[in-house]
Length: 616
Ligand code: ADP
Ligand code: MG
Ligand code: ZN
Image 1 (cartoon, rainbow, N blue to C red):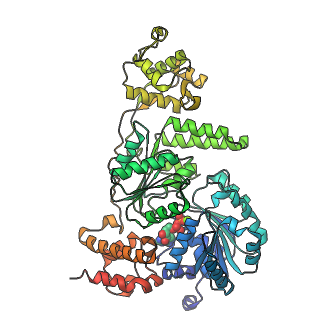
Image 2: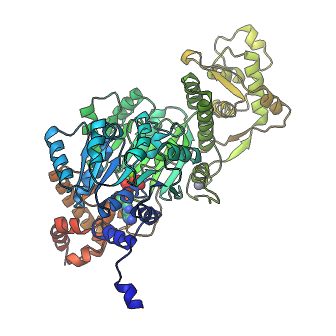
Image 3: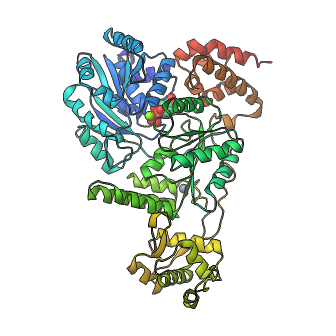
């Protein structure tokens, strides 16, 4: 009996594992990958929510290779398609994209390959796919599956809503019998329901992985003093590492990039206001660099899969927890330790809420969006584990604390400031919303310039000498976060007044305590380091470093010659494994993670040559 079993045809999943090994050079499926692949191989549609870097691409790439016909991949961004197609070609997979950047000759060649049944994977934008002539042509083509990447774009409850994605619901009728797979990294329960309804996947299986990203060290701090100076310090403390700095405005992006360049950091600016060609050049530079800092608006990022991004700094806070996880998630995709640092303030929160108020959308949509902003700031300004808060937000249960975010490491200490808060609230009440924050604090300290007799006669004038200017700023910020104070935008010169009357009364009665942070400067001046198991560049013993560097130099030259990012040839991780194992022959090389047959054939000799150069 055992013989019969051993000699039977391999199950589809075993065959898939074989492709994972031979074509992609990975030893085992990661997380839910195998389950998702098995579902699609059985010809059924599905939705998969797997974390960033979780390997969603293979969930549709492997079944495309195994099922007869062409695999279609719908993707929202050209940069993302370019990257994936380049990586697939390196692994010896027949993949192509059809988008507005592809010239007519290349398009014609791609169609010839499709008609000859030679192409395995075709990448398209949603609007590209949904053109009537395109649909007509594809309806005559046997299809292996249709994958919808970044599927959260279909829902207005999530972030990055793309109206074009809404059209994709029609695919169910247009291509009956073709399994459809929707994948995304970030979607809360409501967004997931919406995706399934919009894409007509209501009866399909849903695979939702944990949102944990144990390689990320999270921290956040209130903006204090000069934001630019703070960002400069944070970046300067992380030399020789690649990072992304997100800024809320185009102008801020340019300024920060210039300031970083002036400080000798290889920084690039990126935003939608730049010419397309310039953007593409900078993206390419960033991807190809060993260490570069991209200073960008959120126009940059989706689908940018540079694996060795070591930090993401939000110079201005993200728009929601989904956006936070997506943006921070661009760090550490290679599984090595990476940092996510967020700067935020009560003014950012007020601005975000105001913007929602001005939007022309349904009241229900507004209410949801307001809730999302509040949840984001509760997370940023909260006192419990940040990673756990994110995971609970996405609906995970029984979540443990991460043990490595700033809050787990206990850098935030609070102290009771209820009495001072009462003084600030009385002062704001007396000043009756006529002044800004700075003037309120001057009033409390009794330092108002050119004070009027009236103001100096108020009982709150100068009653706040027990706190310093910095402490009053911190307290004011806290009261704004808690809604006890409120800022009226007043065309960019905000006026401060008392907030929610009921809550303010509770403070005066002493029923509600106000806690502020003790002035502890979180020690972010030093980049995170933590010992981890496994072969990573950082963990490589010193005597293997020269070989590792030589391999990187070889890879850099190879990447330049081919005009591809270095990591599509080999990841740092793989080079570190090679440096540690020092394979003498092809058989030993192909056993290492990230070395598949195609890469062995292409680069095997060259790599063994570099290794041999270090013998003896
Ligand atoms: P995402 O889920 O964010 O789209 P990708 O599909 O881009 O993730 O994969 C992220 C990285 O993980 C890629 O470099 C890929 O080669 C690698 N990867 C995917 N699956 C595996 C696996 N089973 N074992 C090891 N590495 C994997
Ligand atoms: Mg992806
Ligand atoms: Zn934590």
